[in-house]
Length: 255
Length: 299
Image (cartoon, rainbow over all chains, first blue to last red; front, side, top):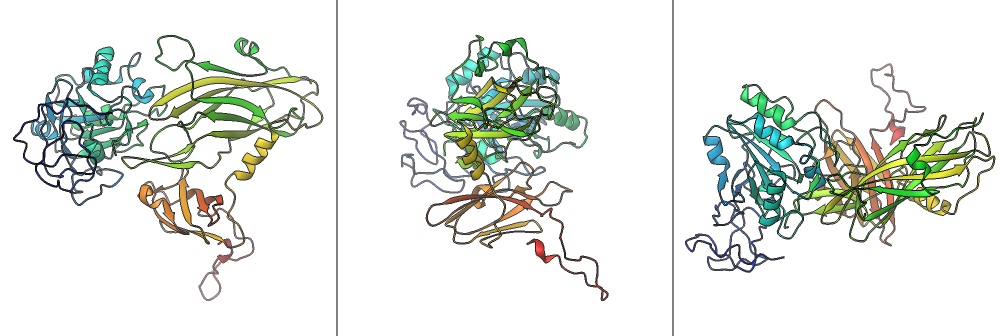
């Protein structure tokens, strides 16, 4: 499935490469470079790892893996204590969110990978209010909670419309960031939804794993690991549970 | 002593072998959704014999393009859950024997182990010696599973089976399926030396003579292999994996080895190291000169 209109409003001053309006970019590797400035992005071409890509529509692509600049990222993603991969992604209203700015502002950041059609994500909405409870809990504090959707266009739960619908239906109060090329998801080693990461004010990864302690597709757990980690960080204490096994539906990466 | 099967009122209305679907959570209507895997509860015998084991199984027929999950180490998904409902007094149930899965690699280095087509999840039910021939017993189970294609759907349902207690065992028409499934279950390492498995520190080395391809599927309690995505399946007879046990735990290699011969024959072997076998004859006490005898017989 191809989205035709997404890139119509690309800035012509975009320095690294041009995008064919008829094909979405496909990211093959972090360090491979584009052929030429005017080459069209077709399925075989690649993005430079270090370039920030700014588009005027949701779905920015920008990720710098923390220490893995030399090619293939480890399947496990960044380790606890390492610099969390940078990102710059736009939410459904087109507003950009960057980790750099959030860290600069002294925020603890919670990232949860999102797919509104996944039973493991759905269970946290409706009768359960896992995520909106977190928003209420940390209201007014320097905590930012973000959903990231790395599902490729055409796959389950993907696309702006589907996510807007979910936001409206469930009254979601976290920004939902679209990462359709999957770069940020892969940088974090996120494999399923709702995989959860917590980043400290020093910009390092403090927690990676499941959102809570119930890995079933229909029941919500008693312990919310993200809440626990954020509370410990706000109190200046070390995080006691730094990793758990993330559960959920697979992230539907493009490639 | 006669047996009184305990039945919830709902189950009493079910047919002999029934499946009652339950709508997925979050559905607006209580109507059952169409599932992409159809379960049925079957029995290896048509009778339950007092004092003997009978094998039951949930057979899932899975729609093309869809899959269910194995009960091993997966990045995503959930294996089918079979929960007994009101097991009659005196009866006991054993663990499910999980057939070997196939490896399922998806973009993003996502690795799962799945079932496609159909799968029989069999488990034993032990019949008490006190069961009376002529009694009818109903065994009912709650099923939960995750079925996935590009999307994942959570499914639930109830299955039950009525079986008479009798003095003699009678194989059912599903008995051949039980036999085939049993024969294909991962077996022990053969004693003919064609296959070797060694766990040395955190390094697992698997060698299958003449195999054109070799793959390892870790079970849930296996120490997590590093880079299973790349290293978990190789062309050729030799597979080496580095295991990363949880802090404080010794390395454990527990999983299914899949080998394919040049003629295309696929074999599954259960690997469980370190071996729990006690050396039968070899001494491990130090000999008088201070050196201990090696327990070489277990490899």
